[in-house]
Amino acid sequence: MSAQRKDAVDAIVEQWAEVRPDLDTRAMEVFGRIYRLSRTMGDRMEKAYAPHGISRGEFDVLATLRRSGEPYTLSPRQLSATLMLTTGGMTGRLDKLERAGLLRRSPDPHDRRALQVTLTEKGLAVIDQAVGAGLAVQTEALSTMDDEQAGQLAGLLRELLTGTQEVGH
Image (cartoon, rainbow, N blue to C red; front, side, top):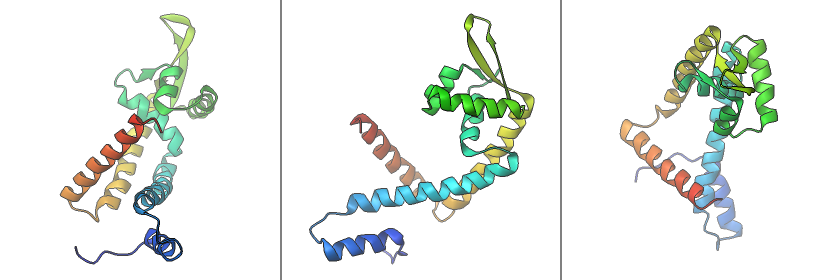
């Protein structure tokens, strides 16, 4: 294997090896890097979405509506379930996005007790621009790998994610 660059996780693992050589730190190496990568990329994504007037959380709501296909309408309950948010957390996001004119809430024509949330034309334009900006940031971050490496990493992370979801932890 070629010489690899060292990162902050390597330093932490080396420190543990000094004081606790009995520990198997492989999991720390994986999850420490996943955590740090998630934090770094989260910050970068926040910066990519800011010029479009939205946060990462607001992006998630708009993107979920956009991915649902025309007419870009879902119930607040469907949005909450997809985004794993409480109804209170969802209400706050919907309020802000509605005030910005990016979505509208209206009565569900099939159930008087329910609402539906629909992406507006302005919201459609914002999410289409923001998703492009976000993908550009992600693509730039992946540019340190070739296509095969990126594909392998995606597959390995899929295995890890599905494995952790199956065990219920």
